[in-house]
Each structure stands twice: as structure tokens, then as C-alpha cells.
Image 1 (cartoon, helix red, strand yellow):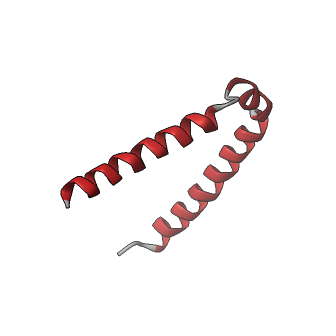
Image 2: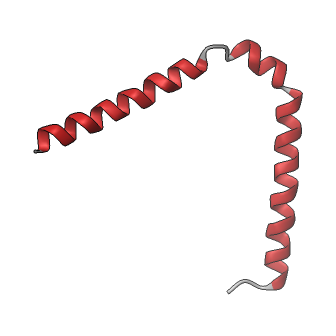
Length: 62
């Protein structure tokens, strides 16, 4: 299905990608804390809204 070269390339690409993303995140960590303070409440509200929609759909279906 995949050749040995493709598997090696995919593995190396994944490892390098994760390292670069981790390095970038650590570099911008202070900036993220400053700019995205309180974002967790928006995520909680969005998930709650989706759950309420599914509950309404479930109860109105029966």
C-alpha cells in the first residue's frame, strides 16, 4: 500500500511538524494568555448550546 520511503517521509514529517508546533506554542504562550483570556467560557457556552439543541431535537422527535 505504502512504500518504505513514503512511510519514512510521513514519520519524519509528523515528528518535525509536532516539534515546530510545540516550539511556536511555547514561544507565544504569554501572548496567548494575554489575548485569549476568558475564551474558555465561550467554548463552554458553545458546547452547552449544541447539547441543548440535541436535547430539544431528541425530546421533540418522540
